[in-house]
Image 1 (cartoon, rainbow, N blue to C red):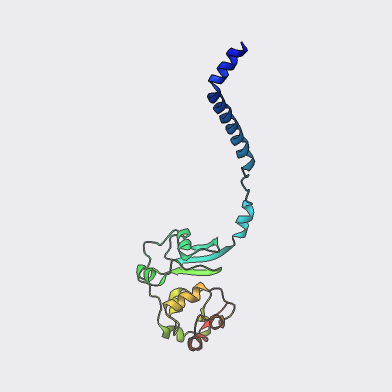
Image 2 (cartoon, helix red, strand yellow; image 1 turned 30 degrees about the horizontal axis):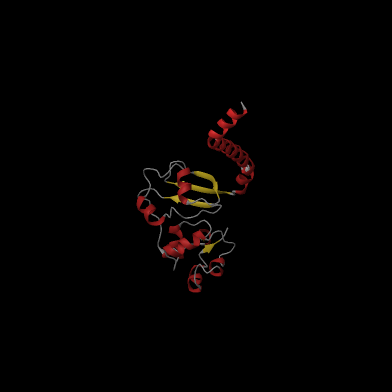
Length: 194
């Protein structure tokens, strides 16, 4: 019987060796995958939410739901318009396409005013120059059009002013090199911070 058994083992030596090797590899693979498997990191979801600061933005005029909205700090005008229900049917589309920069980043306390169709928006520098003390342009909340109405301020400079908000003083425009000295001299008396 020993001879017969050893003969069968000899005859099936290769398949038996391959089977044993396969079992060893499978067990080893299962064991190794369990050791090297890193546990997924648990992110503190609450702290992520807390780290996103919020800002308040006033959206008014020709929008479907005017009001004050809280948005994340990185929000754009487009986000504010969406949360306010979008433009109303009677919004001034020409003004929107020319002066409202939908990609402009918002700052806390921003005011977005969308004029109604046919509503006249004063864009002339002469209107700003004749402004009284009470109607000075607040550079922290002024719209693109209001800033462009300032003497020496065009669309590019107005966008720079808006994107670098908030300011602590009107002189920050000069200190941060948003405008040059000659433009600052033209607008310093018709601008304000509050």
